[in-house]
Length: 121
Image 1 (cartoon, rainbow, N blue to C red):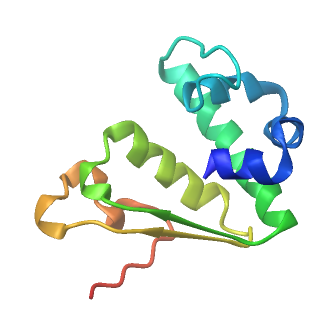
Image 2: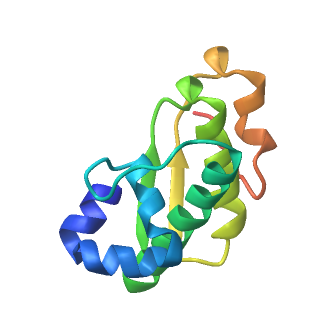
């Protein structure tokens, strides 16, 4: 989704949306900038930057982001999604996640995410 935002709006616009921590995006997109070391502070900074980019992009054009196979998500991914669901509650963005309930680790259960509405099929 981040690469498609860069293709659609340009690297400079996405960097502007990301704000002062834009270089943190290098963790997700090697080549946009040199990625920094990882750690708790870097993870929090990345969450803020991703949230800022998505917020600005969604205010330009409403977004739908689909994250599949969340039963394979690691703790960092789960923490990012929890952060996004709480920080982007007032933004025109729909975040859809799919997972297999029989393979979902307890730490990543969507029921633990704030403002999450769950629908089983």
